[in-house]
Image 1: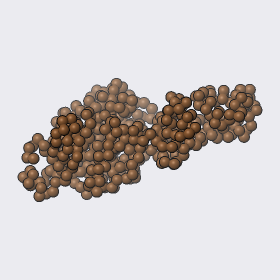
Image 2 (image 1 turned 60 degrees about the horizontal axis):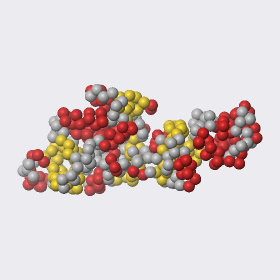
Image 3 (image 1 turned 45 degrees about the vertical axis):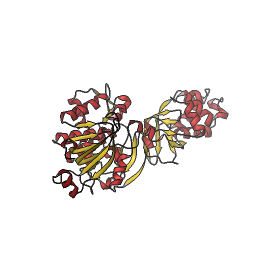
Image 4 (image 1 turned 135 degrees about the vertical axis):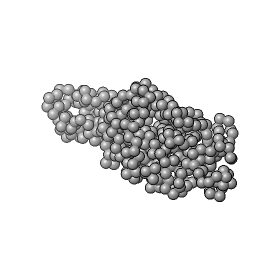
Length: 418
C-alpha cells in the first residue's frame, strides 16, 4: 500500500468527454492523474457522435439549452469554459471543422480527431489511462486509517479497488480527489452504466428519477403500421409537447418516428402524453386548402398535397382522413371536410406507446441532484474531494453539441479544483 505507483492526486472514473477534460485540466495544474475506464477504449461516445463526425459543440450555448431541476446550476461552469475555449483547442491541433445548421460544429474528417486531440493533451501532462477497469469498491479513508496506510498526513482521501477485466487481477489505488465521470444509462453498448449513481447513493447524495432522453418514439397499432410502411421517409415538422416545440426534421422508422425534432421533444415527453405534429409548419393548412379549392377544382386532393408533402405520406393520410372521398376532385369536397383535414395537417395528435429506451437514447435525463453539488467546483458539498461531472449529474442538453459542451465545461471546472 505504500507503493507510490498506486498513489495519485486525482483519480477519474470514466474516459469519456468529461473525464478526459477533467484529467487534462488537473494535469496542467501539475497534479498526478489517473483515469480508470471500464471499457476497452476511451471516448466511445465521442467516436460515434454526429454520425462519426462528432458534433463537438455549439456556437450559441445558453442555460435554456439544458434540462435540470435546477436551471441555474449549469451557468457557472458554462461561463467558465465556453465553446470558443474548446474551439481554440481544436484549432491548436489543426483539426478541420465546419459549421452546420443551428450553429452546430462538426469535424470535417472524423470524430477520431477529437479523441486523438484529447489523448495528446493527456499525454502532454502525463495523465495515465488504464482501460478494462471494473471498479467495485470506493472507500473514504478516515484520518486514523491514513496514518496507518501512508504514514503521512491528510492528503489522500479515497481508496479505489476493483478488477482488471482483461486479466482478472485486482487493483487498488489511493487518491486525494476522486472525479466521477462514468456517464449514465444511455447506450450501454458504448459503456453507459449506472455506476456513478451507485457511488452517489453510497455517499448519501440524492438521485432524481431517470429516463431516456433524445430518443425515438415507438407506437402500437395502426400508427406503427403506417410508420413501418413509411420507414425512411422524412420531412420538416414542428412537434409540440408539454409547452415545448421544435421545428426540425422527422424521420419515420420501422418502430415509429425519429429525427432531430422527435429526439428533442422526447426529453419533455412523459408516458401517456400526446405529441402534436404540424406537418405543414410554414402554412395555415386550412386556408391553403380552401384557396386551392377555388383554383385547382379539377384535381384530386392527394395530387395537390403530394407537391407539398412526401407522396407516400399523403397516401397514408388519405386512408386515415378522407378515404371515402379519395377519388373526388377538389370542387366536390366540402369546406367542412377541407377545414377538418387542414386542421389535422397542422395539429396531428399522436400518442406514443413508449420510447426506444436507453438502448438508443443519446442522454439520460435526471441523475445526481445538483443541490448536493457545488456549481462552482462540481464537488459534493458534504464530501470534500468527491466530484461529479458530465451526464451523471441532473443536467441534460438539447441535441446539437450541448451535451458535449456540458462535458467540457463541467470536466474543466472539476479539474481546476480536484
